[in-house]
Length: 69
Image: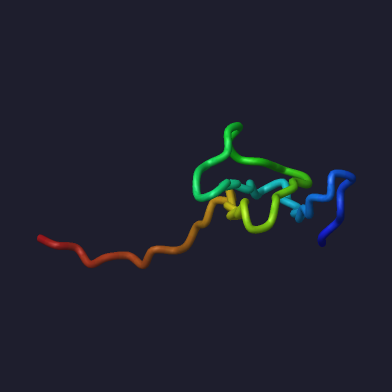
């Protein structure tokens, strides 16, 4: 979703869920303030890029191993 602000700069908005954070990079470098979220955040296209990080714990079953004597 793009919207036009009064100063004439195009911005892009993103939404981050409770279990996610957005890491925003400006010209390839991490912005001050760390990760954003949860909630709405704004980035400037062509200057900023962002990556969503999932904070949920992933678990899976590990098959039992054979005994080694």
